[in-house]
Length: 362
Image (cartoon, rainbow, N blue to C red; front, side, top):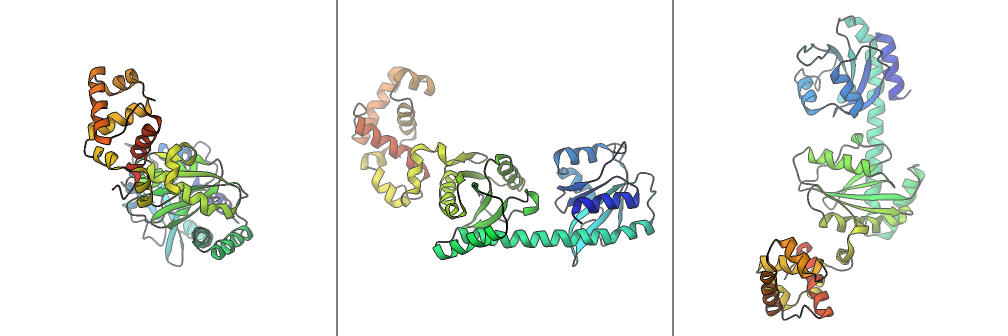
């Protein structure tokens, strides 16, 4: 019996519309409702989760600590019907909630008690699934190890565990404080781990909506999130390199942005060497001096991004063309580079492109 079957059986037993949510109020299963529904329940089904306001309102009734049924009174101002909440628990841990619409309080205490074994069964299933996901998350971490033999063993173990078929996508979500993602909040085909202080997702290819969902979940913690993606990884053996490339994409992303490795252009060089080596290879004394002049730096970057088109550069910067020419002469004097020389322009453009993303910029 799975969670959907348990929810439907509870609805039949108690003769009330039922849904099951995890402890973070994400919808796990729901039974047919007929005409009995309210805006809160409709929103939960449509969006596969309850809002933060609904969660806070219901948790004030002590459902997170409850060991038995809890009644939630109606709220006529919100059109909210009364509910009966049955905690889904296993080994004294709350894994979720079974919700029954019961505006007329037809469900008696004795009837609710008969449904509690179903909740216990659901709690066991949720606990097992959480443990399995945690175990697979450790295997994903092993795929990212620096030791080839550890990666090979992890790939074999994951293949034997029956994870989704290749190709795969690797996503890296970078936050200041990487508390693990709750795997229940993501599709079962998505595996998660935390590695080198980054959230790492391994998931089937072409699943950008899942990555967006993970980013939004992290953003709900009021932290900035930089997201990088690499796809496709043709086999599990390619995940380690895919992770390295997704990390580069994440470090170049702005908060709230998702960057794909394929869009990085010259920034892919960040994968080829350490920051100090790249700084030494791309910086000159002149380009280093330019770092002390933000306006000239922006002017040079814009001019080179516009392929040396003075008119477009002046329009982009909203300055007069003579002002642009004056700045370009100052840039040449500072950097000892000639902007009409192709090699000099390449040197300057690489320095301006890579330097903002290097930890060692000297």
